[in-house]
Length: 204
Length: 198
Image 1: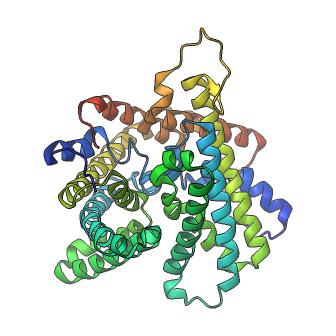
Image 2 (image 1 turned 135 degrees about the horizontal axis):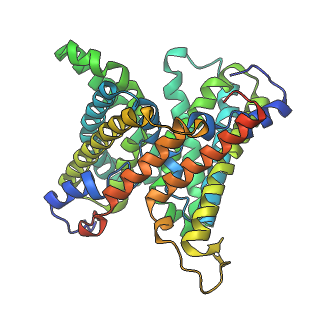
């Protein structure tokens, strides 16, 4: 973890060179399951953006009040509180998607990326920049998941965001709707991402 | 409440094999990717996860149905579940330390990791959404734990072999692991239609 604290480098680092999924394969548990439809993925990752930004902000604000010994527990509770807020908002505004996401919204709590960023960044940086770090990390995460969902929905249903894209004659690939394809597509995306990074000369 | 009509033995098998918590529901991936490099640690972690899952699924069922529902506080369940899980992990750690220091050395380092293992919280949330009864919950918790244990052991064995294979450099590590898990998931889910889990 480099110690840059300027908004620009943080953006680039979190979106690309230190992308939580490419580099650390963290936090995919709660979200791979929802990547078969773009709309669900979008809502899910937006929820993560909100929770992560607010968590980092809160942790950075109250870090001097938290005893070091119990800080993991406190961070978890902060995350859980924001997840409850997000869950209630989703139930109120997009009840259908909320029902489809089922337990996975609650599982944002155990998303390792959120805890990881709170621990690695918000513990030792001022509030606003921590919030920025949280939001950009979540966008890096969003980027990867949306590209997985794009491939899966296009090939699995022949549509994007529910609109039919592929011609009538297109035979949907059933496998893309099923869980194994999420792993295949993730593996291939990591492969492509790392290959590009290596070509750029970044330490992969 | 309207519990799903499924008897215990099919539920146990379904949660171990066809609806494997890891391969079908993607839960518990974080530690899965990092720990599965080594078979001894995988075994230790698998054991710890199974144990904690079994206890927490029962506890969380009791807490949810005996405390939260009567008080009308269902929306607090995320916080309560995670606290229950964290305390059970802590208690387990202390008990194991007292009863069997040898086991503690094997499991010790993995226990704190379990609190943030998505599989544990995931199972508690599934119990609540699928409206399982108490016994069904315990069986589902046990089955999911065993399934997770089985999956991580299999993967760490496969990874030993894959390491020696001619894998392209950018695909090494997480990339090839994800694809390996994909093949495992296909094998497990192949029988999916035979045993419904809810």
